[in-house]
Amino acid sequence: MNHDASAGFVPPPYPYDRLDSLVPIASAHDGGVVDLSIGTPCDPPPQSVLDALATSGSERSYPPSIGSVALREAAQRWMKRRFSVDIPAADIGATVGTKEFVVTLPQWMSLRTPSRDTVLYPAVSYPSYAMGAELARCRAVPVPSRPDGRLDLAAISPDDASRALLLWVNSPSNPTGDLDDLDAAADWGRTHGVPVFSDECYVEFTWSGRGRTILERGTAGVVAVHSLSKRSNLAGLRVGFYAGDPELVHYLQEIRKHVGMMVPGPAQAAGAAALDDDAHVEVQRERYHSRLVRMADVLGNWSGTPVTLPAGAFYLWIPTDDGWGFAERLAVDGGALVSPGEFYGDDGRPFVRVAVVQPDDRIELVERRLRAAGGLSTQSREVAHE
Ligand SMILES: Cc1ncc(COP(=O)(O)O)c(C=O)c1O
Image 1 (cartoon, rainbow, N blue to C red):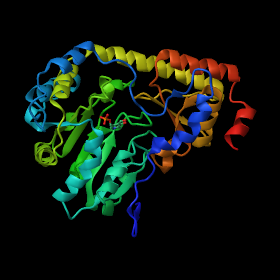
Image 2 (cartoon, rainbow, N blue to C red):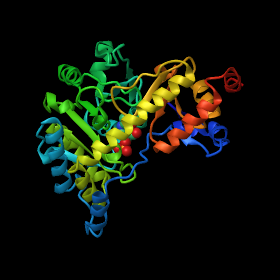
Image 3 (cartoon, protein in one colour):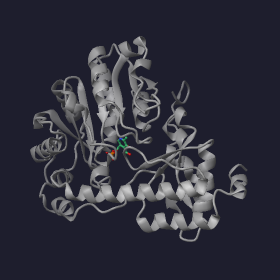
Image 4 (cartoon, rainbow, N blue to C red):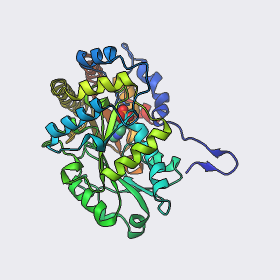
């Protein structure tokens, strides 16, 4: 925890700001830097969604914090189509994107159960799970993964389980792309009396089998969290939702009303339109999959080690002896910016994450540069370690 007794809380450097030193190196290339670090979409959302945004007529009045009926019913229809689960609109709440939900949740859960103080989360994961715990002055306790990429629930100590306010699961995972056993997570939570929150924001980009939600195991003690940022290229709009256990959802709906968490009305209208349309998601799936295949091939040739495709999400998670060194060599040779694995936890240190979130012509540019560099050269290695 960064709680300095004299200075108070000092926010840690924002992970992606730590890449600033690599930007001038990558930018030196003709055509500039190709940013494959932050997982921010670059492709257009559907026109029908933009039309809904512009024509909702909902600008004047305050929007409902829990989400409009139209948004929540669209979420209900989508979950029915996608997962064959029927969650009443009353058990769904809107989020201003899902990051704020992830980060503020421990505070609300801690108020609800003051005798507990622990947030369990995947050891290699999206940094906001741990940050939310820290900002709520809770213990952030990482749960390791098994070799198959699933959470090692048996590794959670009885003491940590008895102190846990919640367990986060994330499938498909950012950054690893691994798929978790959501049934096992739901069962573990019920057995130990720990609410399980399942971050499913990459579910539409599941490459191995069909996308799953934890709600398929029933809603008791579990909440699924979804976002339109990745599914519909709407990260700038800030719309997501949570759904599941009625008691948990109603508690959070009420708290979030008091906090003033409100998705702007026009954004809610656009979100409903996006959720009712699946065709654009099919197009987006194809884009990400072909970029993953292409980038895996390019990086495999350049590094001399085959790069495996993920089971889900749009990241390549590449083992390497030195994540920072790999990122620097890629900036030197390819003008590309990628994330050292330590951004996602200590266990991520021997990895690098490559987000395929640039248009095809930019990815092609990286390919041409790396081909011209002639592979992961001795010279670029030396530069990287200076
Ligand atoms: C695993 C995971 N959860 C949640 C989010 C938050 O997305 P948003 O706030 O745009 O809904 C992200 C964004 O990258 C993510 O990777």
